[in-house]
Length: 125
Image 1 (cartoon, rainbow, N blue to C red):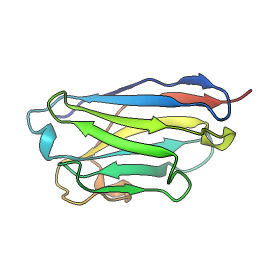
Image 2 (cartoon, helix red, strand yellow; image 1 turned 90 degrees about the horizontal axis):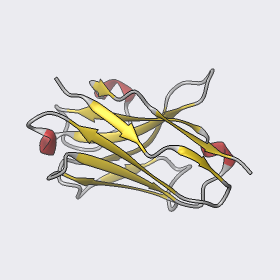
Image 3 (cartoon, helix red, strand yellow; image 1 turned 180 degrees about the vertical axis):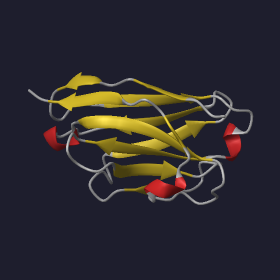
Image 4 (cartoon, one colour; image 1 turned 45 degrees about the horizontal axis):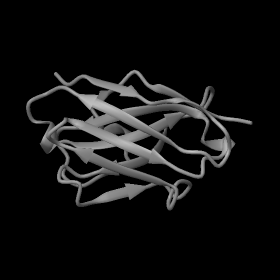
């Protein structure tokens, strides 16, 4: 069983920055592909970014490329999402997800077996 707990969300002005964290349980965290998704009420959950087990490979949605950076610290069993140049359209609940079976970072929702409870990010002036 894998448990994921997100933190770091909040209210930020357009152009500002936030860093989300996701702390994971599980002895084999260092082998998991990890990802961030986000969801706005009434819309489907949307892929944001993913990272391989080693951190050597990453994938981003076009909408966040150049603004967001995903990273991981396997010793701390934690992944991060550094979000810069935030826009109002980035407002959403952000979810951390784990793919214990994967090797390459994928944007496919169905590949992720474990999900956190989400953290709210609001970008507004």
